[in-house]
Length: 222
Length: 385
Image 1: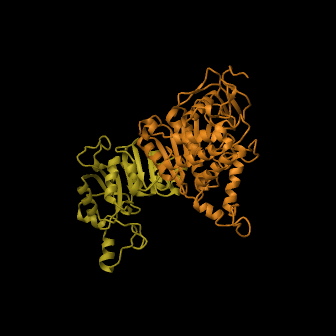
Image 2: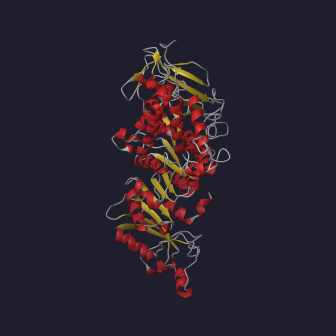
C-alpha cells in the first residue's frame, strides 16, 4: 500500500466519512479511489482525462468516466455525491471558479488541494532572482507547466468567500511530513504552507456533521 | 413439426434453434405478435454450477450468432474472433457465451424470409415491423428457456450496444453488467438518412418485386449490394480509407470510362458482392428500420435517465472510438450522462483509433484491455458479493 506514502491521501482518508459517495476528479490510475473503497468502504466514482488512466481504473474494478473537469462536470446531477475530491489540479483548470462551484453543486462537500504560490520559496524566487519559481511543488519551467491558474492561500480563501463557500477545515502539506492543521487566513501560513488541503461546503447550509462527536478542528493533525 | 411443444432446443450444447410453442408468442411493440417464434443461437463454453457465468453477445446490423469459431456457411472466422475465444476478454474457459441471431434476421431466427405458420408462405413484407426492444424480448425468452436467471453480462457493439442498453432498461434484475460499444441511445437524423438510402437502393431494384422476390424466384442483388456499399463507407473513416487506398488505381492508367478504376471502388464492389451472398434484402429493410425506430429516451418520457431508473445495480461500461462518425463519442457521452443522472455505476473510455466505427471488430489492444479489465473486475465483484 505504497499510496499511503502520499500525505494528502492520508489526510483525505481521514476526512471522508465511511460508506459515503465520492467523486474524484482527475483520479489518474485510481490509487486514491481504491484506498477509499478498501479502507472507508466508499462508493467511489472517478473522472479522468487519459484513456490509459481510465483503463487502469477499469482493471481495478473502479467506475471511472473519461472526461475533462473543465467540460464534463456539468453532466453530473446536483447532490449526487457526499464528497467531490480535486487533488492538486484546480490550478490547471481553465475556469477554476466555475469548477469550484460545480464541485459543490455535485457534492455536499469538496476536498480541494492547491500549491501555495504565496510560499516563501516562491516569493524568494520571484522577488530576488526575478524568475518564475521552480520548486518541489512547482517543478516545471513556465513554458512547460500545466499550472495556468496559480494562487496563494489568501487568494484561495478570498475566492471561497466570494463564492459563499465555507472552509470547514484546512491543512498545510509539506512533502514527506504529516499534514498540519492551519488557520488559512493567518499571514504566516501563507508564507510557510507549500500546499494546502481544504474541506469545503456550501455556506448557509448546515452540512451533516462530518463525524459524530468530532468537530472539524479535530479532523487534521490527529 | 412439433410446434405445440414448449421451448425445445433442437441441437445440443453448442447452440441450435430454440422453437417456442403457441403458448409463448412474441408480443411486439407494434402490437403484432409472432407465433411459432424461432431463435437461432450459438453457445461457447460451459454454464457453471451456479449458472452465474452466462454472457449474452449481441450482434450488429449484419452480424449473426457465429461470433467466434468458424462460420458454418462462409468458413470464415466468427465476426468477433478478436474478443470471443480462449485467452480473449470473453473466454469460453471462463464464460458461457450465448449469441443469438436477432429476430428479423436471416441466419435462422424468425424473419421476413421465414414461413408464416398461419399461411404456410414466406412472410416477405407481411412480416411485422420489429424494434430493438422486440429483439431483446426474444433474447430474454431464449435465456429463460436455457435456464439462466441472471446474465453476468450483456455485451454488444453498434446495434448490439443498443440491445445491451435495452436489456438494462427492460430486464435490469436479470443482468449484472452491460457493455455498450460504439453505439448510441437513439438513431440520429444522419443515421436514418443513410439507412433510407440503403432501403431505397433495395426497393429500386426491379428484382425486389415489392418484397415478394423469394416466392418469385428473384433476388434484388444489385440493390442490396449498393445498400451495403453505401453503409460500408460509414463504418470506416476518411483516414482509414486514405491509408488503405489513397488514389491508387487497380490497373495502370485510367480507363476513361466507368469501370472501377480506383482501388477503393473495387473494394466497395467486392464488399457489396460478398454481402449479397450472405444476407437477405428484406432482413436488411427490417433491421435498419428497427435501428431507425430506436430512441430509448423517447420511449421513457423523453428522459434517457428514466430508462435506467431500475438499473442502478447494473455495472455499465461504455466505450467509443475517436474516428467513429456513425455513432460518434458524443452519442456515448449522452448514455454516460443519463447513467450518471440515474446514479448507475458507469465507466466510459474513448479509444484513440483512426479505424472508424468498425474498430470494435479489429485489433485494438486498448479497447480489448479496457473490456477485459471491466469484465474481470466485475467477475471478482460478483464473486465477492
